[in-house]
Length: 217
Image 1 (cartoon, helix red, strand yellow):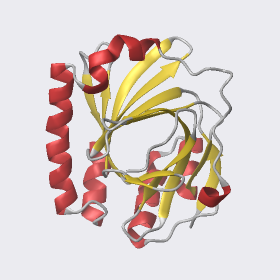
Image 2 (cartoon, helix red, strand yellow; image 1 turned 60 degrees about the vertical axis):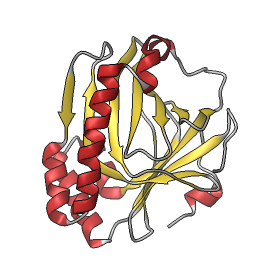
Image 3 (tube, one colour; image 1 turned 180 degrees about the horizontal axis):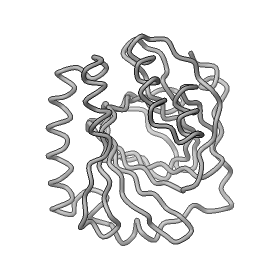
Image 4 (cartoon, helix red, strand yellow; image 1 turned 90 degrees about the vertical axis):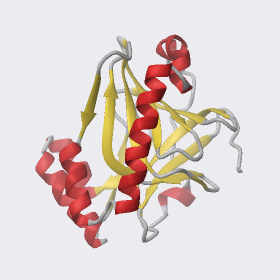
């Protein structure tokens, strides 16, 4: 397995089963071990998103997100340059899991934990590939309140065939794994206090997409 050095810029890409890039985000490696890759991001970091999805974010229009998913189902979408906004984040991603765990931070501190259900990672020259499966879990900082997010969109992408039956089964297993981790305080939740104190170092350079990634189709 390719190992990344702390401080290195990596690119997290969502790659559709056709091989086309759905989106990509530049991040900074905090640590990379056999257990998990830990990477970070801050406002201003380079990204590329589907044009319709980016417009939905800018206009706060969820109906346009539906259009973006329909474009994904047909394989016809364009990417637009963008940048990460509003929050700092820390990502924990084991190599074989169907999820990753994020911690999101504002100036007030840890805002929430966030579990993104997605494909296991495939390491690349520039970083790693996965594919977001839409449904998410939002967890309060103290790990006591859990809220499932985007179940409606998950049902929609299931109808569109974006998430297959086998992927759906993997997500069901991953949901149970994540709930057990929260209950047992394992993974990053075992060090929840240390994660809550983490901050992006202003001296770190803003992550930029390398030319090889930003030119990808």
